[in-house]
Amino acid sequence: MAVLGSIASALSGILGAVGAIVAAQERANAANQQADNELAAARAAEYQRQVAEQNARISTRNAERSIRVAQIEQQDQDAVTRALIGEQISLQGASGLALGGRSQLLTRKSAAALGRKDALNVRYAGEVQKYNYLVEAANQQAAGTLKGMEKESYERSAAQSRRAAGMSLLAGWLNAGASLLGTASSFAGRISGSSSNTLMKSRDPWAGLRITA
Image (cartoon, rainbow, N blue to C red; front, side, top):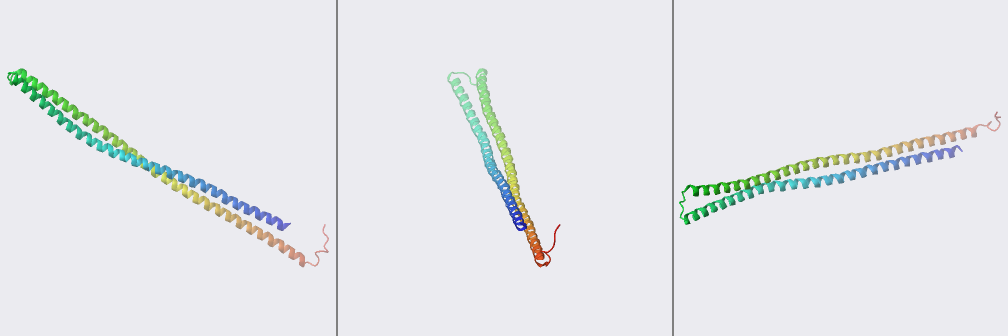
């Protein structure tokens, strides 16, 4: 009976060790899954960072392009104004009016002022557009920086989850090993004790003659 009890105790210890390993593996699997999710989030953040940086570069180029376009449009407006003034001079001359007359001068001066105003409006619109593009570029750069920080955070978390998975497995195996060693030691002790008792009884010539109370 003592031997059967020892075997049952040993089996219980073995099952406990196996249970510890299974539980550790489940915790490790959960930690690894968490790490996989965090790495996926890091990859998504990296993609968004690249998109933001690309948008920032596009906005910067658009800002440079908008001011160049505005300068060209301003030059075109100045050319239109000069053509208009030239046409007025031709008409005034063809009409027999004195080109230096006060009314004629005021007409041409007014046309030049209006033309200059139109040219400045074109230039101002270009400057505003350039500013808006630069603001957008700055916003995209900031978003890219934040996504880069987010990526690094996810990667650190993933590394911690990987370490947790490894530590969980290590702890599970160590606990299982300790349990098996304890079980083996206890089992060996019980078997040794049972064998010693049996041997002592077999060597005692009076074992069958003793009267027990």
